[in-house]
Length: 450
Image (cartoon, rainbow, N blue to C red; front, side):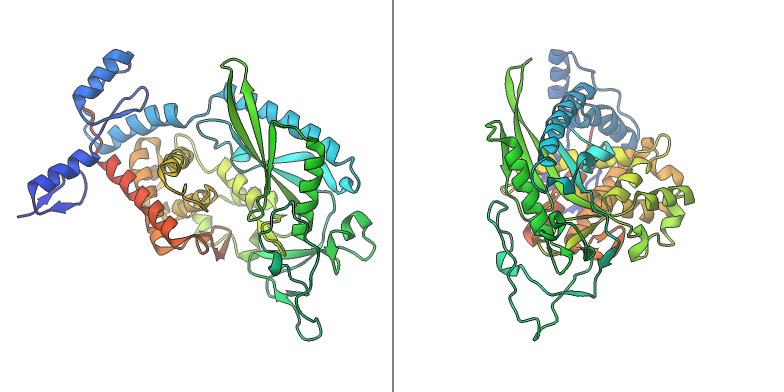
């Protein structure tokens, strides 16, 4: 005889195994602070002692329970950044960066960089969670490029021998083959090389090879100039992380009210504004037009494409501005896409802290693309699918969908379907992330109120 769990689709041969399953996943949430308890008595004692909202009479549906928990408790207490915290941290960061960039632009050849910094990542999409302690900014090169070599073209240089060397180690151009015997290296999908004219200024040509601007050299140049601008400050650490497009700055900040120190992380990336169309890889698709209006699509196209130094030899074609534009209006009135996305980011933070290796190599960037695809996949369910009253169903579906994509190791870039965002992620890390999604989904299915 088999026994079915009353909350999920699992079956068990033995009642005791089912009981163990229920003890593992069932929980009673506090609707004030979102803390979780294994028994109703523990929850009631907590509410009495902390003067928190007592558990309600059990709502009839799972969606009602999850809306109370996810939207009114977990989101408000565990996810949302307070306006005061966000404002104070942002003012601190902007004041510092404005001083640094004012110095950078005055250094020798520093005039190629704009002193004005542009917000990126969750800074631009306003999807920060918990604390305003991580910021992303682009530092735009003033030079305008109108000629680009794309996928299928070749370049006649290589930096492979120096791959992933820290930025404080100078890398000069080394040709690893004879140009006569070899035409060069193919530019991979999703990358390009910007070309300048023969009469470009020396401050640009010094970072170029055959009129092609080298991302590694730009990143290295910017790193050195920022380091000079910091002038040995002990409260700021500049990280040499060459595996991504950003230079990471860690500020140790003293909170004068609490007299506690905490770190603020700032990712700075050199970037090039381009005239490359957002639709270079065939976006929008017919399915896209079913979920986005013509006006929304035009706004995304106007956002444009920038290039960032994600690779040492080639510039990555970044859709970050298009992503920002889409995230800003992805929700209509009383809809929950952004809330689900931020809850997933918060859960991911918990999973990172519990992981032996911190789920290395996974960033919340892929969660945005996952959300965009899910938005298209669920359009046949109608406009009400994303209503806030259905947040429980939406978030459980989101976890299940992400679990499958991690298992399949396949998540296309929403704007470039030939790029698989998960292709280079470690199998063991993806397996762990899939398991985290599964465990969280099962737990939510077993939520109890009374």
